[in-house]
Length: 229
Ligand code: C5P
Image (tube, rainbow, N blue to C red):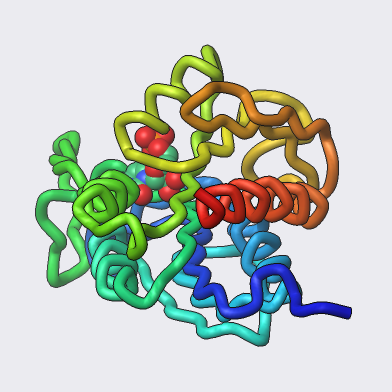
Protein backbone atom coordinates (compact mmCIF):
# COMPACT_ATOMS: atom_id res chain seq x y z
CA UNK A 1 0.00 0.00 0.00
CA UNK A 2 1.16 3.52 -0.81
CA UNK A 3 1.06 6.55 1.47
CA UNK A 4 -2.34 7.56 2.80
CA UNK A 5 -4.04 10.25 0.66
CA UNK A 6 -3.82 13.05 3.24
CA UNK A 7 -0.40 12.07 4.61
CA UNK A 8 1.60 15.24 5.38
CA UNK A 9 -1.45 17.52 5.18
CA UNK A 10 -2.28 19.71 8.15
CA UNK A 11 -6.06 19.87 8.38
CA UNK A 12 -7.96 22.32 10.59
CA UNK A 13 -11.63 21.54 11.27
CA UNK A 14 -14.10 23.65 13.23
CA UNK A 15 -17.17 21.94 14.64
CA UNK A 16 -20.12 22.55 16.92
CA UNK A 17 -21.99 25.64 17.95
CA UNK A 18 -20.70 28.69 19.75
CA UNK A 19 -21.89 29.86 23.16
CA UNK A 20 -22.53 33.57 23.54
CA UNK A 21 -22.75 34.50 27.21
CA UNK A 22 -25.41 36.81 28.62
CA UNK A 23 -24.37 36.39 32.26
CA UNK A 24 -22.55 33.68 34.28
CA UNK A 25 -25.46 31.22 34.02
CA UNK A 26 -27.16 32.12 30.72
CA UNK A 27 -26.13 32.00 27.09
CA UNK A 28 -27.31 31.92 23.47
CA UNK A 29 -26.42 28.92 21.32
CA UNK A 30 -27.83 26.92 18.38
CA UNK A 31 -28.81 23.37 17.38
CA UNK A 32 -25.43 22.28 16.00
CA UNK A 33 -24.45 18.82 17.30
CA UNK A 34 -20.88 18.87 15.97
CA UNK A 35 -21.42 15.47 14.30
CA UNK A 36 -20.63 16.58 10.73
CA UNK A 37 -17.41 18.32 11.76
CA UNK A 38 -16.33 15.38 13.92
CA UNK A 39 -16.95 12.96 11.04
CA UNK A 40 -14.82 15.16 8.74
CA UNK A 41 -12.02 15.37 11.31
CA UNK A 42 -12.03 11.59 11.88
CA UNK A 43 -12.06 10.81 8.16
CA UNK A 44 -9.08 13.17 7.64
CA UNK A 45 -7.20 11.50 10.52
CA UNK A 46 -7.88 8.05 9.00
CA UNK A 47 -6.49 9.31 5.68
CA UNK A 48 -3.22 10.26 7.37
CA UNK A 49 -3.72 13.99 8.02
CA UNK A 50 -2.42 15.81 11.08
CA UNK A 51 -5.73 17.17 12.40
CA UNK A 52 -6.52 20.12 14.65
CA UNK A 53 -10.15 20.23 15.74
CA UNK A 54 -11.43 23.54 17.09
CA UNK A 55 -14.73 22.84 18.69
CA UNK A 56 -17.41 24.74 20.48
CA UNK A 57 -20.46 23.27 22.20
CA UNK A 58 -21.16 19.74 20.92
CA UNK A 59 -23.35 16.78 21.86
CA UNK A 60 -20.90 13.95 21.17
CA UNK A 61 -17.55 13.16 22.81
CA UNK A 62 -14.61 14.55 20.82
CA UNK A 63 -12.71 12.03 18.66
CA UNK A 64 -9.18 10.91 19.53
CA UNK A 65 -5.97 10.94 17.55
CA UNK A 66 -6.00 14.68 16.93
CA UNK A 67 -5.26 17.99 18.65
CA UNK A 68 -8.43 19.39 20.22
CA UNK A 69 -8.88 23.08 21.01
CA UNK A 70 -12.03 23.83 23.04
CA UNK A 71 -13.67 27.22 22.68
CA UNK A 72 -16.95 28.76 23.79
CA UNK A 73 -17.64 31.96 21.88
CA UNK A 74 -17.27 33.05 18.27
CA UNK A 75 -14.55 35.52 19.35
CA UNK A 76 -12.57 32.68 20.94
CA UNK A 77 -13.07 30.52 17.83
CA UNK A 78 -11.89 33.43 15.67
CA UNK A 79 -8.65 33.73 17.68
CA UNK A 80 -8.06 29.96 17.67
CA UNK A 81 -8.62 29.67 13.91
CA UNK A 82 -6.60 32.73 12.87
CA UNK A 83 -3.60 31.83 15.04
CA UNK A 84 -3.50 28.35 13.46
CA UNK A 85 -3.68 29.45 9.81
CA UNK A 86 0.09 29.64 9.17
CA UNK A 87 0.34 25.94 10.16
CA UNK A 88 -2.58 24.74 8.08
CA UNK A 89 -2.95 23.31 4.55
CA UNK A 90 -6.70 22.63 4.48
CA UNK A 91 -9.45 24.23 6.56
CA UNK A 92 -13.00 22.92 6.90
CA UNK A 93 -15.39 25.32 8.61
CA UNK A 94 -18.23 23.10 9.73
CA UNK A 95 -18.95 25.05 12.94
CA UNK A 96 -22.24 26.90 13.40
CA UNK A 97 -20.91 30.27 14.50
CA UNK A 98 -23.34 32.69 16.13
CA UNK A 99 -23.72 35.80 14.00
CA UNK A 100 -24.48 37.95 17.07
CA UNK A 101 -23.44 38.09 20.71
CA UNK A 102 -24.84 40.08 23.63
CA UNK A 103 -23.27 43.55 23.57
CA UNK A 104 -22.74 43.42 27.34
CA UNK A 105 -21.83 40.32 29.30
CA UNK A 106 -23.02 40.78 32.86
CA UNK A 107 -20.49 39.89 35.53
CA UNK A 108 -23.25 38.80 37.94
CA UNK A 109 -26.45 36.85 37.35
CA UNK A 110 -29.06 39.27 36.09
CA UNK A 111 -31.98 39.91 38.44
CA UNK A 112 -35.49 39.87 37.09
CA UNK A 113 -37.70 42.92 37.43
CA UNK A 114 -41.35 43.46 36.60
CA UNK A 115 -40.31 45.12 33.33
CA UNK A 116 -39.81 43.48 29.93
CA UNK A 117 -36.16 42.95 29.03
CA UNK A 118 -34.47 43.94 25.78
CA UNK A 119 -31.18 42.22 25.03
CA UNK A 120 -28.88 44.21 22.77
CA UNK A 121 -26.85 42.12 20.34
CA UNK A 122 -23.77 43.04 18.34
CA UNK A 123 -22.26 41.37 15.25
CA UNK A 124 -19.64 38.65 15.60
CA UNK A 125 -16.79 38.56 13.10
CA UNK A 126 -17.33 36.17 10.17
CA UNK A 127 -14.44 33.75 10.66
CA UNK A 128 -14.70 32.12 7.23
CA UNK A 129 -14.67 35.55 5.59
CA UNK A 130 -11.53 36.45 7.54
CA UNK A 131 -9.89 33.16 6.48
CA UNK A 132 -10.80 33.79 2.82
CA UNK A 133 -9.44 37.34 2.95
CA UNK A 134 -6.22 36.17 4.66
CA UNK A 135 -5.82 33.43 2.04
CA UNK A 136 -6.25 35.85 -0.86
CA UNK A 137 -3.13 37.69 0.34
CA UNK A 138 -0.92 34.57 0.41
CA UNK A 139 1.43 33.47 -2.37
CA UNK A 140 -0.06 30.66 -4.47
CA UNK A 141 2.31 28.08 -2.97
CA UNK A 142 1.20 29.04 0.57
CA UNK A 143 -2.55 29.17 -0.08
CA UNK A 144 -4.87 27.04 2.02
CA UNK A 145 -7.60 24.91 0.50
CA UNK A 146 -10.76 26.37 2.08
CA UNK A 147 -13.99 24.40 2.53
CA UNK A 148 -16.99 26.25 3.92
CA UNK A 149 -20.48 25.13 4.85
CA UNK A 150 -23.81 26.74 4.14
CA UNK A 151 -26.94 25.82 6.07
CA UNK A 152 -29.88 27.07 4.08
CA UNK A 153 -33.64 26.63 4.12
CA UNK A 154 -34.34 28.00 0.61
CA UNK A 155 -32.56 28.93 -2.66
CA UNK A 156 -29.69 26.65 -1.61
CA UNK A 157 -27.63 26.92 -4.82
CA UNK A 158 -27.90 30.69 -5.12
CA UNK A 159 -26.86 31.28 -1.51
CA UNK A 160 -24.10 28.67 -1.68
CA UNK A 161 -22.48 30.21 -4.75
CA UNK A 162 -22.84 33.69 -3.32
CA UNK A 163 -21.07 32.52 -0.13
CA UNK A 164 -18.35 30.74 -2.11
CA UNK A 165 -17.46 33.93 -3.97
CA UNK A 166 -17.82 36.34 -1.08
CA UNK A 167 -15.90 34.22 1.44
CA UNK A 168 -13.33 33.09 -1.19
CA UNK A 169 -13.75 29.34 -0.63
CA UNK A 170 -12.54 26.50 -2.86
CA UNK A 171 -15.61 24.43 -2.01
CA UNK A 172 -18.93 25.11 -0.31
CA UNK A 173 -20.89 22.24 1.19
CA UNK A 174 -24.54 23.25 1.24
CA UNK A 175 -27.26 21.50 3.14
CA UNK A 176 -30.93 22.23 3.26
CA UNK A 177 -31.44 22.18 7.02
CA UNK A 178 -35.20 22.12 6.52
CA UNK A 179 -35.10 18.74 4.70
CA UNK A 180 -35.81 15.51 6.63
CA UNK A 181 -32.61 13.49 7.19
CA UNK A 182 -30.35 16.53 6.79
CA UNK A 183 -28.82 19.23 8.95
CA UNK A 184 -28.58 19.73 12.68
CA UNK A 185 -28.49 16.81 15.11
CA UNK A 186 -29.37 14.05 12.63
CA UNK A 187 -27.13 11.01 11.97
CA UNK A 188 -27.48 11.49 8.21
CA UNK A 189 -27.03 14.43 5.88
CA UNK A 190 -27.92 15.41 2.31
CA UNK A 191 -25.53 17.94 0.78
CA UNK A 192 -24.58 19.56 -2.49
CA UNK A 193 -20.97 20.52 -3.10
CA UNK A 194 -20.24 23.67 -5.10
CA UNK A 195 -17.07 25.15 -6.60
CA UNK A 196 -16.60 28.36 -8.59
CA UNK A 197 -17.83 26.65 -11.79
CA UNK A 198 -21.07 25.53 -10.09
CA UNK A 199 -22.41 22.22 -8.77
CA UNK A 200 -19.65 19.63 -8.32
CA UNK A 201 -21.71 16.82 -6.85
CA UNK A 202 -24.99 16.16 -5.13
CA UNK A 203 -24.46 13.70 -2.26
CA UNK A 204 -27.76 11.93 -1.50
CA UNK A 205 -28.87 10.98 2.01
CA UNK A 206 -26.18 8.96 3.81
CA UNK A 207 -24.55 8.87 7.23
CA UNK A 208 -22.44 11.90 8.15
CA UNK A 209 -19.41 9.55 8.19
CA UNK A 210 -20.10 8.52 4.59
CA UNK A 211 -20.67 12.15 3.56
CA UNK A 212 -17.29 13.00 5.15
CA UNK A 213 -15.50 10.29 3.12
CA UNK A 214 -17.10 11.52 -0.12
CA UNK A 215 -16.15 15.13 0.71
CA UNK A 216 -12.51 14.16 1.16
CA UNK A 217 -12.56 12.25 -2.17
CA UNK A 218 -13.79 15.42 -3.88
CA UNK A 219 -11.37 17.74 -2.03
CA UNK A 220 -8.36 15.48 -2.66
CA UNK A 221 -9.07 15.28 -6.39
CA UNK A 222 -9.27 19.08 -6.62
CA UNK A 223 -6.16 19.66 -4.49
CA UNK A 224 -4.19 17.22 -6.67
CA UNK A 225 -5.35 19.09 -9.76
CA UNK A 226 -4.21 22.42 -8.25
CA UNK A 227 -0.80 20.90 -7.45
CA UNK A 228 -0.42 19.68 -11.04
CA UNK A 229 -1.06 23.12 -12.53
O1 C5P B 1 -23.02 33.08 6.11
P1 C5P B 1 -23.20 31.76 6.77
O2 C5P B 1 -23.16 31.81 8.27
O3 C5P B 1 -24.40 30.98 6.29
O4 C5P B 1 -21.93 30.91 6.25
C1 C5P B 1 -21.68 29.64 6.73
C2 C5P B 1 -20.21 29.37 6.75
O5 C5P B 1 -19.51 30.49 7.31
C3 C5P B 1 -19.85 28.17 7.61
O6 C5P B 1 -18.70 27.54 7.04
C4 C5P B 1 -19.54 28.82 8.97
O7 C5P B 1 -18.66 28.04 9.74
C5 C5P B 1 -18.90 30.14 8.55
N1 C5P B 1 -19.12 31.25 9.50
C6 C5P B 1 -18.05 31.75 10.21
N2 C5P B 1 -18.22 32.82 11.08
C7 C5P B 1 -19.44 33.37 11.23
C8 C5P B 1 -20.54 32.88 10.50
C9 C5P B 1 -20.35 31.81 9.65
O8 C5P B 1 -16.94 31.23 10.06
N3 C5P B 1 -19.57 34.40 12.08
